[in-house]
Length: 276
Image (cartoon, rainbow, N blue to C red; front, side, top):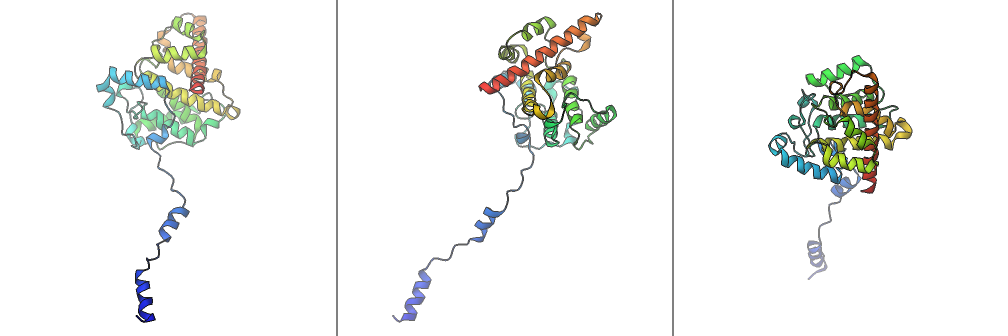
């Protein structure tokens, strides 16, 4: 054939040039930020003890708990969390990890607002009127987040305090003294395995994760295990009505015992995480 025909045949057999722009676009375009989801908000892993406890809790009250478990990736708006304060744990809306959604959303807000680095976080109380406004807006379905770390931290404490019976409200002062005198890891293991009621240990494990985050930034927030024990003890232990308040000295001693127990449990939780 002629040179022209050979050239035409070669052009027909040659592969078409690869389309490069789409690949370049994908490579060069920064990744879009992920939407905040319940799974990313609850990124703190459960310990082995809490995983075991979760299975025990589900086996004990499967019908009650599974009714309120939410899909893993579902984003729950604040308007869906009306009336969560004061509910029994089995009636609260929960994540797939069995932690109340309201607690997870509040922790997410705390982290977003830089609360873990805030001086005196969980210890310093915000203005009472501002806190009441935030609490009321949550209950009314008008809450839209907050950039005030101390308000968010106080809402977390209020929620824990509102749980009927408290997470450790059934532990007697005598037993609290015994546990507080143990090595931290030993006390932590006993509380998580035997003392906490089914369903409560998963929430406690979530709380220990929050405490670890606080302690990771202790240089900034000036908080210690002892300080965290003092601020969380009134929200986890027995209500004042369950303690003999006729003797002021006994009341003060009970507060000290519970603060010491919480300090020990937080230290034990940190040791457990380090060992794991």
